[in-house]
Image (tube, rainbow, N blue to C red):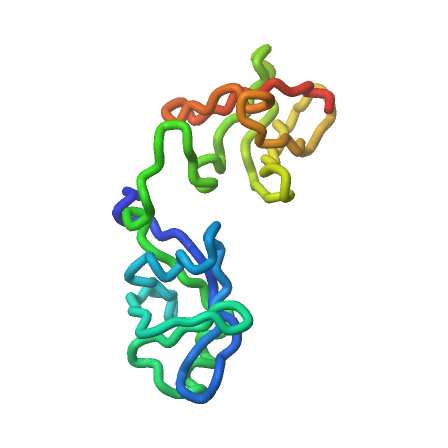
Length: 175
């Protein structure tokens, strides 16, 4: 799938808000309000991604928005828990040393000594740093099923090679 066709989930709808078709929005972006910078929104309706435009939005105990053409509470309620996505090509370009999490999923993780730890299966935030969840290889010599590796640039993460789909880490494979 090309970047032009790739769909990235950036949030989801919460409950309806008020009687005029407004919805609560749960943003997955670093700055929650920046979800409204990405246009158009794609919402999966009956298995198909459909474009929607945000008519208005505001902060109210979180974020709420009004989609164009969605004018009544009952209709808005059918959007509760639906994902909000955008095409990947509307996301800002990053510098060579910056990465979107989605780029890291599936990358092979190896130690600086060449031991294959597995592949990136998930990533989560801890407050102090992000953590890679690395699904270990089936025949891992240390009997590990997964490893949690802190994403600390230069100290733990030594190299990320987009082309080779490989992350080199300074990490004890037995840990």
